[in-house]
Amino acid sequence: MKEIVVISGKGGTGKTSLTASFAYLGGKDVIVADCDVDAADMHLLLEPDFEEQEDFYSGELAYIIQDQCIRCGKCLEVCRFGAIKNLFNTYQVDPLACEGCGYCARICPTNAIINKKPVAGKWFISNIKTGSIMVHAKLGIGADNSGKLVAKVKNEAKEIAEDEFKDFVIVDGSPGIGCPVVSSLSGASFVLMVTEPSVSGLHDLKRLYELIKKFGLKAGCIINKSDINQQITDEIETFLKEENILHIANLPYNEDFTKAMTVGQTIIEFSNGNLKKQITSAWEIIKNELK
Amino acid sequence: MKIAIASGKGGTGKTTLSTNLASYLSEKETVVLTDVDVEEPNSGLFIKGELVYEEDKFKMVPQWVEDKCTFCGICQKVCNFHAVIQLGKMIMVFPQLCHGCYACSELCPESALPMIPKKMGILRYYKNHQLHFTESRLDIGEEQAVPLIRQTKDYINNTFSEDAIRIYDSPPGTSCPVIEATKDTDFIILVTEPTPFGLHDLQLAVETMKELKKQFGVVINRDGIGNSNVTDYCKAENIPLLAKIPNDRRIAELYSQGKLIYKDIPEFRQELDKIIAYIKTLKINRQA
Ligand code: SF4
Ligand code: SF4
Ligand code: SF4
Ligand code: SF4
Image (cartoon, rainbow over the protein chains, first blue to last red):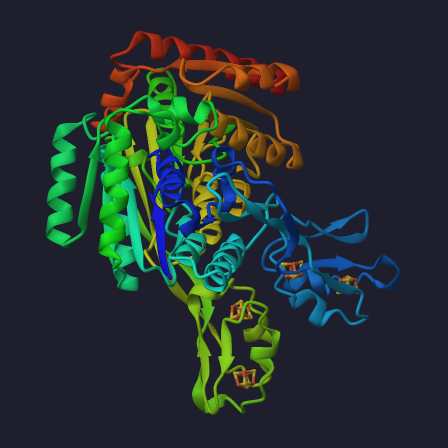
């Protein structure tokens, strides 16, 4: 079983549309994991049925039992996150500011503080229209540790793939270079970077690749909207060569990305032209690379 | 006046709007633009200015002092983030996992875990006439954006006067970083695209803003693609729709070159005028 992680540094490059298209092309052989848990969009294209769902608990949240509190103020003193407030001579926890470090509960002289495990989100296992299975999630507002939810979604998808002897897990990765994307990348067999030829696209690509290098992962790149700025497309290609990154395809600007999404389809279903051909051969290249 | 520009997800035109709005406004008044999307700070690619100040940013993490340690195991027990681990006769600290809560350090009976600064990123401040631009950049391999966002906001609060209009280019999403970035702002502009992805991500962002009890409005970018569901949603939910930036290949091209758009495209500038007009009414409300 091979794991392909698709990432883009920043959104808006067509990453999700491409991932969904590959999932469609791979059909039953591909288990899908939507690890862009902050803004999970894959379900809009793949028609999941939300067959199984489960709450995801993560971290802790301090809670003060007012009856037991003697108002000594020690908790407020130790909290480094300004999460404990003194309001009308009572001590209260601001749940959005609390990092769940548990320090206050440890030093409260009357054990008035307990740590609750908050629901940080939900995750789902769904049957999707490709005839396969997708694992996806919805993160609660302001929840910490989206990295953990990403790991959960990914591991669940991998287990299913192993149990059912599937060839591939394809992961729609998280944006950024922080904790969620680190979780998305760990254990990947191949990282597909989707970029676009803009100064910020190139900038993000380089930053992202630095991270991928740290993990020593094999990577390839698709340049989307490649005709928007030929000069930067050339620069990206040079960068790929220098770093020995597999250059998979250049996709010219195409409104079909948006049009397909608007009717809830993958590009493979929607488009009949060159774009479909190019995405299909990109998928073949990726599969070949993993043989 | 503190305005945050945010979106449910990246790539919707958040940075385009922040940089153009800030530059345009700074033709008439002092503007403080801050890029707190510390994982992917991009505003600086569009704003040219003179570097005035640069500073490494640190977070506090514990450091083990071997000869003081009695291996009591308390530190490992009190760290909720598994950032301190005892392995035989060794205490290991994982700075990337550390939230800097000080619990291990202060509860260590032997004072064997003093907190020391560790570099997590860099802050830079540039100036271009009336535009003051600050960005912070998280080091590769650092996993936590929130402490850097927090320190960047502190820097802004300590450096600039309250009178200038402040614009924050916020990180995308709905989790901790965006909450930290938008927490004490007066108004939030949510940027989205008129597509099913755009609508879905906007709804998440709106839920977040409601939870934070924030005043906010929406700007539609690339108007003309997709469908009218975002407009309908804003109407139904009574959310002010501040402007609609047309879908225009010229905008995409200027953006790709790292250029500001309002200077060349009057239709774009008109939409900025609408946003500014709206912001100004907010100002009056506030003083009244
Ligand atoms: S430390 Fe405990 S007793 Fe003291 S103010 Fe806080 S909750 Fe109350
Ligand atoms: S758990 Fe930590 S962050 Fe939360 S209130 Fe207590 S000390 Fe503050
Ligand atoms: S709490 Fe202090 S003395 Fe105890 S094991 Fe940790 S470092 Fe050593
Ligand atoms: S400071 Fe807090 S988070 Fe960091 S290692 Fe110590 S207990 Fe863990």
